[in-house]
Image 1 (tube, helix red, strand yellow):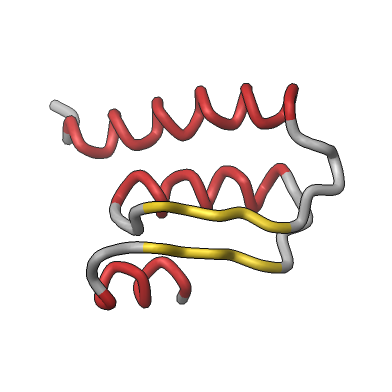
Image 2 (cartoon, rainbow, N blue to C red):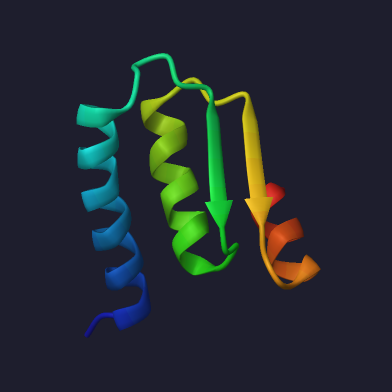
Length: 71
């Protein structure tokens, strides 16, 4: 039995990583997120492995999720 939320987050971030690897510059260092929930956190983990990130820009409705993402 698997948690559907985790599977969805991992699959979506994985597909985005494939696209980003093909479309983004290899030395991209800034990632921006509109929305700071589960999807943003899973994407950040994957993108941090692919790119030399030095800056994260996060826009969301709630400070709690934004702060959690930025930690």
